[in-house]
Amino acid sequence: HVQLVESGGGSVQGGGSLRLSCAASGYGYISACMGWYRQAPGKEREGVAAIANDGSTTYADSVKGRFTISKDSARNTLYLQMNSLKPEDTAMYYCAARAPINIAAMVTATGTRCEFGYWGQGTQVTVS
View 1 (cartoon, rainbow, N blue to C red):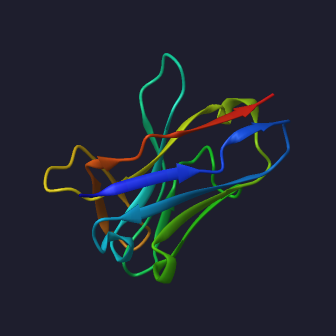
View 2 (spheres, one colour):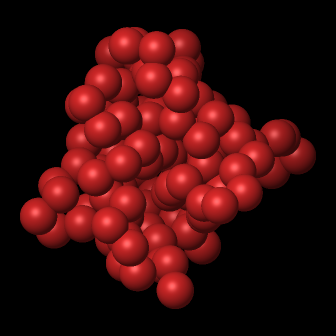
View 3 (cartoon, rainbow, N blue to C red):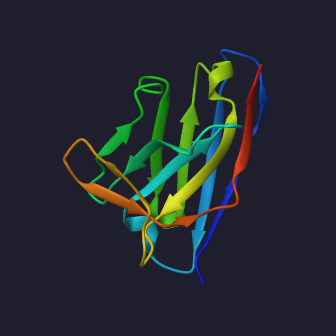
């Protein structure tokens, strides 16, 4: 049974920082593609960042230079370091991993296609 559990969200002022974590269990997927998505009220879910097996990454244009995705395979944990937060970053943030059936994808800088079909319950980030 796959579980993705996010933590680290909260309320911060503009310019502040947060680090999100995603603990993965139930399979060894932390070594495969993992990603972060977010969804703001009234908007569609959008890809924020992804990291592939080879360590290559990709970021949404709106977060480039401010967010950093990383993973700790030994701890089966995915991270998203968010700096210089803006009010438009306010959203529910979801950890994502590959599933037998996938409905979303991001392509990393090396051309690796990361597909996603498992989602965590989300962690709320509010920037004022």
